[in-house]
Image (cartoon, rainbow, N blue to C red; front, side, top):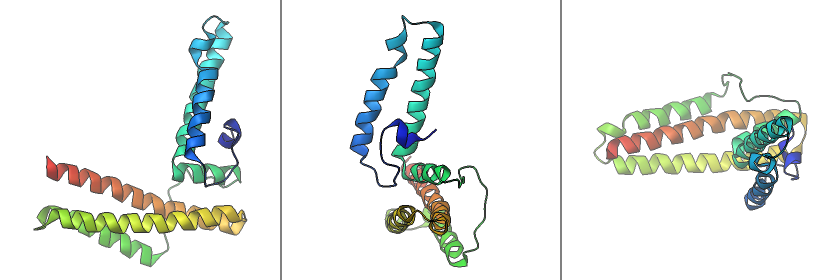
Length: 174
């Protein structure tokens, strides 16, 4: 299913999230199962299925990495459930250093400063990679799609580290 077509939006990485939200609400009102409660069993079942599709599509298009994966899948490059390692030693070293900093937060004299430092690094890297991802996806070539896939894989590391940092920060506050 092409989520962009469902929402009648252009198949591109940069989306107007306000427009996406408006179209989501329109589709929800139109296909909500309560609108079909007087219909046949088949009509009610189709409404439930369509509502589930709309929810899945909205969830995917709203999040940059899922949106990028969906764009690549539409182009024939499916990476959403792959398990692939990296051959980029510089990136792997950066990840190891960030993980070491994360592990050392609890023993730090100024945990808040370490958290802030890691947060800034993560935000900077995510912003830079998201810009590169947008450029690669806009190019639309097979070579650039492969680059986009690698950028998505890298971004997943940063988003996961962000979650771990937030969990660590929450544990320290408790």
